[in-house]
Length: 309
Image (cartoon, rainbow, N blue to C red):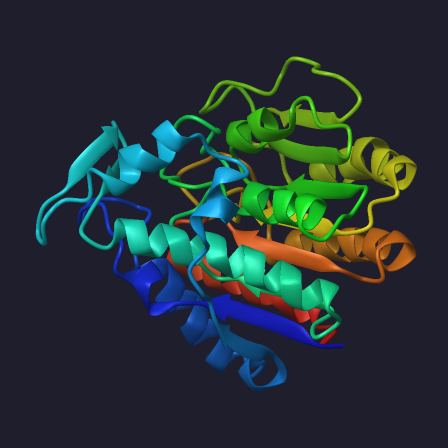
């Protein structure tokens, strides 16, 4: 089993202010925990390249791309895209490397160089719609990777699994009319971005859960709702929007998952991938803002991907 770990230094240079929970310290906490847990030598480290504009344009409109590229501020300044999303001097490069990690990981997994991969990148992506950056997100990394698998590699069916505490409205918008893509998710509801509770058809299995739900609730819903849909879709590759802000210690949400729940979720996804997709998975970091809980949860996720437990 070979698990890749993609990141890039530019992803730590994007920042939205010292007050902002989506901070560069998130990636450093993950790297430190990988070392202290002693699994760092057992994964393949790769620098993330920058995505091409063609990669990004498979998901995002020219206007959405231009709004980021043309508003990068001078060093020390910020440009606000919305109330909680802004740019600094490094944001354009960071966003390209975040998307590029997902694309490169997809290429490596489909080439058989890696069985699966985790992209430790920021800014995150799953709130970025085709025509708007929002919710801490600039480009939709996982949607760009999934579209790359479909259009460049010619896959016929892929699945996107999203276990962030927030609904992945941007990913849903990118594939709402795309039968080749099944998206399954759970998320706290009602909660930002206040979407996802409406049934939009057979290719999206959204599972809203109330605040203060714990891992046992999520596990039951996954078994009853996600897994039958994934088996029916028979994906040739799986993509994970891996948000860890549903953790009990993360104050940004009010769900009650623990590291063992993230390991269990990963096991279920891997079982689907083993059955239909030759084990092929690309996972990208989304949320997770309590640094200790985030780092421990990511390590549980990667240990499971690498079959180190």
